[in-house]
Length: 244
Image (cartoon, rainbow, N blue to C red; front, side, top):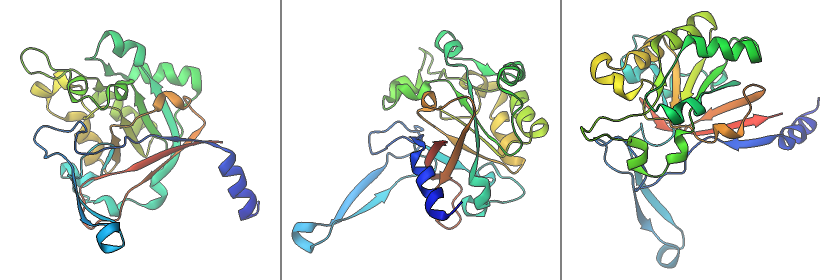
């Protein structure tokens, strides 16, 4: 296939933006400063428009490289091989369960049930956990889902599910719609065990994905791209799904 024909076919595909637009009022981890944008040159005065932006790396839809949790491999965002940033996309949908139980953790049984219906997760896949939690964006209160004691309630992965997709199915990365890999109610007693398993085994993940309801369980390709800032332990990212 010629490059022109390849481009024509690619543009015929359905493209789905899996990233949130973000700004100063977007939901974020409470210990982070809100994003900001300062205009430093204007069209009227200077003949061109320039803004200076400030935000932490783990803001909005973002990528976590291994070094974010102290992986011995020491991989920063720019160390992730380019070919690992494009992959078959697998979407495991438990949104109906999460509607009834926001404290739900994805299990190995859930994944095997998905495989019975869709086939085995292919090697090198990006595995996304769909919960529809992203529909709460951009409301910080709804995203946090605090109870009267200040405990957050949102879904996550079980450690066993993370082990399964990486050790048994040899996925390349994973993603979800919430702030964290781990289910919120488990964090006070278990910490971030699932996230540690992802990053300390040399994989990366993307947090706070959106529009997973617009892509199928299998058959799409995901592309994860981010600015090439030196020694970044995380960065907001633009994630696109292509449906051939």
